[in-house]
Length: 163
Image (cartoon, rainbow, N blue to C red; front, side):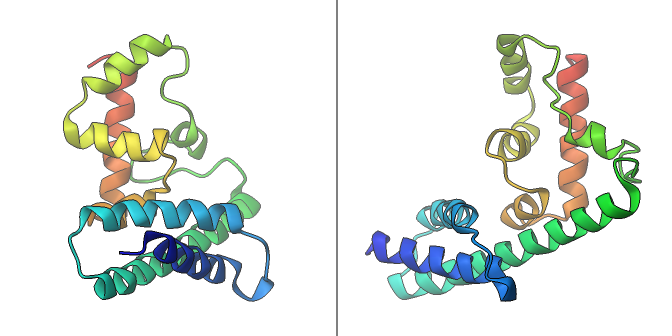
């Protein structure tokens, strides 16, 4: 399989999806998105043609989700500022975005993170360490977005409280 060609196709698709009609430069985000999708595709054992088709489909969907999330985030910030409250967890936007490891020594935080269940660890790692948006994690894990938010909230609580 020609992984260089696959990467080029994925990056070009991501740039097209992220830029939309504005034509803004989203090359860095497109390359990150393409790398994430490439890692997903490497785990699958598909024929080359199917790999390209699936890759383009995933990049397009993740790119659309990213654009949608950014648009919603801007609308919420414009309308509510930082005062929004997520009904799912009862936590403010600031607390959801806050680093759960703040105030904990790095080594201790890593120990607490590693002590999480594999499910919570994986979700937390994807969001806080890898930096993937919640919607992309939900798509990747094939779960509802609210499930990802719940897992992140449980992981934050466990790390902070050393449960």
